[in-house]
Length: 427
Image 1: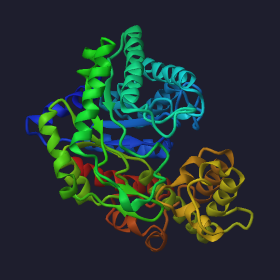
Image 2: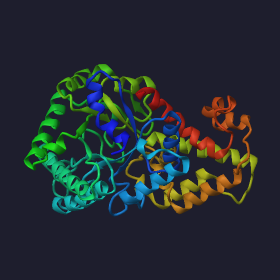
Image 3: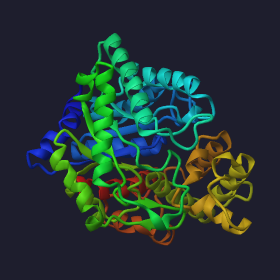
Image 4: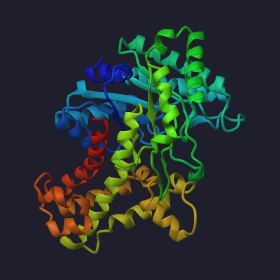
């Protein structure tokens, strides 16, 4: 077990003892985001928690084309390149359950989910969020709570067996599912309900019982997090900010659940004061994903404008134009999320907080476009007035010498700005 995994496993005990502790969970498979997170951790001598979701990475490849073992090699390769110690790394699996196969009958979907969880545990992922909250074919939107818990326990049994088989670290578990399905919120943003204390306690109780029925009491003793809804969310152009008074009763339940902390999903775009308040109230694990690739996209688009000025080339397609072409050619990752007129959808494709464009960066045409942009800018120093004009958030850091005025460093710095906000909130 890495020292980072030890520290994460003890997070509830540390909090119960009066220590203020929290950690950001980096939910992205973009190599520049991973590099920024590891560089940030190295600079601060801090642990880094990186998570992959069921849709993104699974035994069938997911939308990234990576299996869990592929994803581990991918992250560790970047860590090796920048000299980040693997003792500081924790890998997690998010929303592990039948979601990618919910169009199938439950027995088939759960069989695939079991193979996925086996692959995650075999690859040495030590933080496992079990999520069987979605209905499979013929079940409606969601099965009963007892069924959700029973399926989670079934998957935990698979993870335990895989870890035993590999002689590796037994996983720590996160339970609970009071969040939007992976991929983003679809419901209206104006009636977001905070999880009730009763629901949080019941989630723990039914999962404890389900684990116990399978003889998994020891595994349940390693459950550290409960996913609840503290009243935070974001849509295409709006953010619901954390209000501590709305979650006061929910936060109070942790006094009765000293084994646990809360895990908050969809914390992207919250101000640092709200993130700090979440940590104060026991939401010790803060998920962030779209904000990181949103910041990266901002920097890419700013650099595209800068390249048009510093290295004009009529044959080189602008990056926004290239990405528009890529997204229109394969609308599956945005068409169910963006609505309104064609003009409104165009704006959302590029600039929505939900950042569905993140699914398209691995596409060959997108990679060709970003490669062409970076080659056009090369290793030249970008003049400060152009950084001020097109990458204004980074102007101060470049001016004071903490960020080099080069394209690659500016991309990393844009992501690092977001990571700094989480470091300030959790530190």
